[in-house]
Length: 382
Image (cartoon, rainbow, N blue to C red; front, side, top):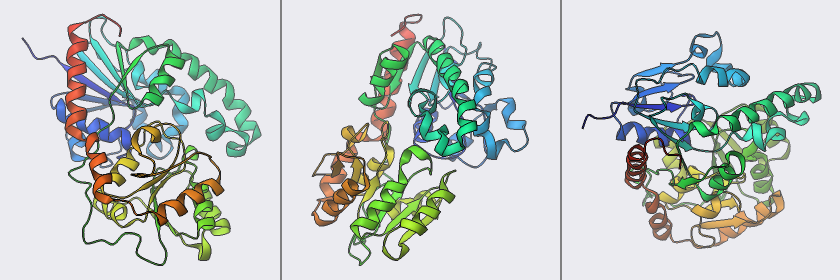
């Protein structure tokens, strides 16, 4: 049988976050696939992704697009529908925004790995575009735009033949917003790369420094961690960048930990991120995540995680064994969770064993099986 022609579609390529780590494994499993994306910032993703044929939209050629591409959100539906995928037998979309809405041949198998239905259009408008974020006038203007985007998102949901997602939490969101079922395949963790460092002595310093590795965007609730570390008397290192950085730096200066012991480290290399995990007293996740790859990378390094007990954290953290789940979202409750984690004697080897159940080979094998099964039932919606 002739090998199928495969296309992979990803929203945009601007950095190696959780979605791009999923994409990296897809590219490894389908090395001859062409990759379609709205925007590609060259050099921002791994060599595995950079090394393939990448087709971009005309957003790529607009002045300032690399910096201000998010402002183009209202035209993303138009852009994603311009890709010509008629020559492909299999389309795999990796979607947290619009990639799942690509137009395919009627007889093509379209499997969507849906990281989440777009948050800002469905249930997190205020976190991104509320009056406190963008001003009263801009928020009022954007509300009907995002409402229209949500209607388009629902109307195009049936372009996908089969949905796969990262957690039971997101599967419920897909059921609610798209009226579709989704298979759950947990995202891949590179447990070969992320390992404990036997030479490090985590948490054995006066600062008892905690760590956040995150895009600096509103829904991550990083200001909660800043305030909680102040209350708990712990230091905090923040790895990552994003549009919220300036606001968070002001918040840290005004309300941070004692002695303003909050460090913004910006983007680091993978090796430096691994070192930061290995040396952290605890890794913090104060926001509700659909899944959350960072907590599993931290656990692969043998470090405990303090996380809000919502969303994907309930599926990746064993309370009292690999970390601490905090039931309430406020700073006081999160500070109590940090104190508990710093006082508890966790077993790094047990934490590591838990993370090993989320490896890359497991993910790749499961995706290949689903794609083959979907292709065998061509035309059937799952």
